[in-house]
Length: 558
Ligand code: AMP
Image 1 (cartoon, rainbow, N blue to C red):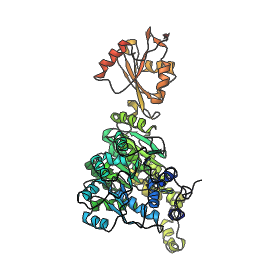
Image 2: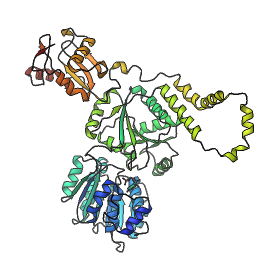
Image 3: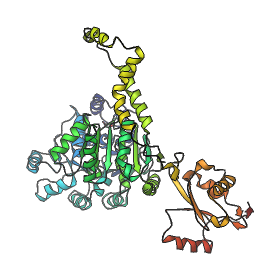
Image 4: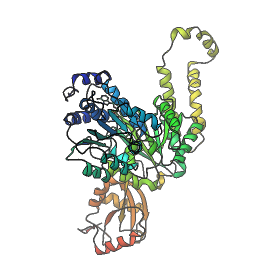
């Protein structure tokens, strides 16, 4: 097993990181540190947040920068204030007493004159958001000509946030012989453009599969009706008594509304979005880090750079408009080798996006049911009982009070005491869930079942005109493909054709199953189709006529 010293770090620095609890390098550290220590190579690291990338670039920077020179030697750009503060703090922690650098973090929302004063004292390493750095360049408060290393952290996020021009301008102020180290969770065209324009033959490193999320994240979705969105969120939170979660909404207004509603309903929740002042945002983040807030409701932009460990759940109130955001959102859980759950609330209309995301992250997003009232009550009751079982009894402190307690309960049997005790917490949930209908009711009957994750919609050139009804079609699918009723989702029976839904994993079975089939003298053809056909329907029909689509060939009669 590799140690930090065998990667080429000096003993002093290795000791210093050991002191803060880093004994074994993470994969990105193991692979990046030896390359970056060479000091003269451009570098691209494709890695999710939480993989330990700050130390992967931070430790080589500490070794390569000269503590005796007061010139600005390294510039680290990051998308948000939170991330800047975090990186600066991490670098200081890493170097400990090994080396002291004058590190200055500059970002919007804080006094620029204070930041200028700090830079004037001599900033050996600057950590900046692009916008604020542009301001400082405009005021001639920073000199970037002496920079030897530029780190672009979360490059995709900076570009998503519209910092493209700022990055171009900043990079144009840095010397051409510097080394550029770029880190990104995803590799969209814009990041490639930066690589092409500003980097020379970079050493590329991918941690995990390209575009695949962190494998410690379990990806789930819950199929909901639009009107039930908030109620399902509440159920999800109730079903996970130990949740420490981040909830994403699309807009600031939604974010505040959901947070307000949660607070009203008794949850330890708060909101984080761009309408808050910097002080308010800092306060919210502090409470979240200290776990005083158990669920933080945030917009995509505000939540960038949130680097709180141990987040158990990332909940997507809606699927993000930009599907790339999904990766950024879910990357806030399962940090530093821990496990986490990303769960999206999706209506039927959003299932197409779920499929796109599955393709992007190359992972199945598994459908999970809406927790039923009974399940929630059971889970809460057991959680309470576990707490009772595990609570530490302060024997001597409580001893003096116990005689009165026993006296108070003397008429009750053991069973009665347990029942009543459990009811104190249980009644709260029973009162609520005992009176509301489970929102899932009705959805199952409409088609998709829990057995399959995301479905594919199949066109088949048979319909009512062929004497088929739903039962007949199911029977035919069963006979040809071996799939039963449980494997088939929604069926739409038309005159000359029909549609049915199946698990995407069964598409090949259906294609092959119908590959050699005729029904009442007609060759059966099936095709995977998208949403309900609209304008494209006619074109497709024409295509069918031309025989361009897959069709059954062998003509076996059924
Ligand atoms: P990062 O991706 O740099 O934000 O790091 C994610 C988390 O992993 C942070 O809490 C780090 O302190 C922690 N971490 C980074 N490297 C190591 C390591 N080698 N051993 C243990 N924890 C680490």
